[in-house]
Every structure is written in structure tokens, then in C-alpha cells.
Image 1 (cartoon, rainbow, N blue to C red):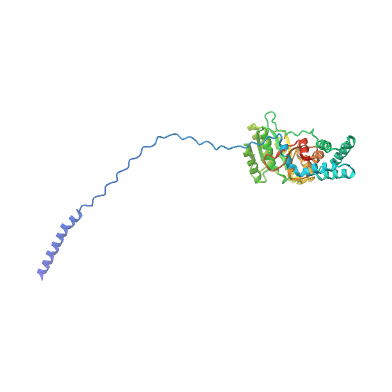
Image 2 (cartoon, helix red, strand yellow):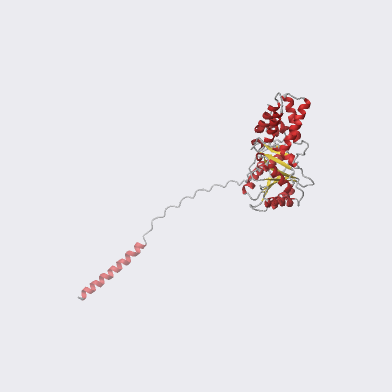
Length: 374
């Protein structure tokens, strides 16, 4: 048995010795060669640095408003509805072979229907009737001349209709625009700015209608078209503060005119009318308000007279802007406003175009009302 043990011991020793010889050889086996490194690409030379020039600001092409001289003549066809009353209606009656009492009553009814007003109508008809009798006028041309003279006289051509928009003593002229809701006041304010710029004035607009967010945006759009600056406040803010800031900005910028758009309001709302008075008082801390323009919608007819009366009491209206005359047959409201309040109509709106606001001239207006074929 012992010899088996010795044989196993010898075999174990031989196995261990063999492993000792083989394992080191395995460890020393050479590794496979590494792949060759990629050849680096040549780095291109950097282009010489050229200083970049700033891009020029975008060119904004400003609109050039139409000249105001002669606008009323160019827009005369817009009064076609009123021409049916004044031109075709009145002259058709006056051209009859015999002007009896019935004919004169028809003339009175036509003038009253055109919102000339009862008192003014009676005066016009009485004078026209007397002159026709004394002069023995019968031809259509002569009657048209007489009617023209009476209507122009009723509009009082001696009234000062110029906008007070010229700066004095280094201070810009201040124009306050007021009116009822829905009269087209903010749009009219933008058009007034175009009238002033067309006549060579520089303008700053004050968006003092802080109750209607769209009003400030609308005014800014109008101003941007002609390069005017707009001063605005936060929505729901104090309109008097905005008006004050607009005048101060206009003074700093050295512009000719500051045009302030106020919130539309009903004439029978005491609180809102008092607020309008506050706006004017605050503005006057920097100097007088040179012009207060009341925007009236011609289609409202005689109701516009009550509006004008209340606004005049609150903020001393100095001129009327009569809008939407192209959409009514009641062009006689011009006469009624002036006779009742002794306030001149200074501008008239005869369309929706940006330059459809014209300085008012009594002679041109009456001529347009009567029409070329009258």
C-alpha cells in the first residue's frame, strides 16, 4: 500500500512542476499589435478677423398726410345725402314759376328736416322770401345765389375757425379733445394729429382715455403712421396724470402742439363730467388749454346740441368737430350748433379715410351741399 502512496506523491509533484512551466509562458504571450493612430487632418488657417458693422435700423416709411387746403372741395361728393335736401330739394322748389305760401312752407319743412333748427329756419326763409320779392328774382341761378348767401350768413363766416396750435413762449399749444361715447373721438383725435402735421406742426399725443385699453393702442397706431410720439399710462390709471405728463413731455421735446384724447362720457353722468373738469384743471397747472374741441356725431341730430351745451359748461368748448357728415342728410346741424352755442365748427369728417377730416369753410360747405347740378 505504501508504494501507491509514494507513486501518487510523485505524480502530484510532477503535475505542479509542469504547471509552473506552462503558466508563465501563457502570461508572456505577446499582445496583438495596436491599430495605427489616425493621421490628424491639417487645421485650416483661421480667416482674418474683419470687424463686423452693425446692421442699419429698419427704415420705417412714414405717411405724408394730404394737405388740408382744399380738402373740403375734394370731399364735396361725400355730402350727396345732404345734397338731396339742400340742392335738389330746395332749389327745385325755388325754381317754380310761382312761389306761393305752400312753396315757402315746403322750404321751411326741408330746412327743419335737415336739422337747421326752427328759429334759424324761420330767419333764413323770411330773409330769402323778402329778398326774392324785392329783387324780383326768378331764374334758378339767381335763386341759388340768394340761397347760398343766406346759408353762408347763417353759418357766420366771421367766426374764427383756425386751430390754436401754435406754441407760445417756448410752450406747446395744448388741445383737449372731448366727446360722448361712440362719437368716433379717438379716431378723430388721430385724424386731427394728421391735420396738424399736414400743416407743418410737430405733435405729441396724450392717451388720457385710460378706461379703454384699445384707445391707447388705437392712438399709438395713428401716431406711428406719421412719426408722432404718444404718452400713455397704465390701464385704469389717472387720466389727469397722463394729460399732465403729455404736456410736460411736449414741453421737453419742444413740439408745437400737444393733443390730448380723453375718455368718452355721457353728458348726463355728473361724476364723469367732473373728472373731465379735473383733467383740464391739472393740465392748466403748466399753462392754459389753448383749445377744447368737442367731437359731435352729425347723425345724432338735435341731441348733439344738448351734448354740446353740457360739455361747454364743464370745460369751455372752443370749437366743434362734426363727424359722419357723409352719412346723414342732416347737414344743417352745423348751423344749429353754431346758432345755439355760438361755437364755431372748425373741422368736419366726411369719410372713414385717414385724411377725410377737413377744415370747415362756410362758403365751400354750402356750395358742396347745394351740389354742382343744383
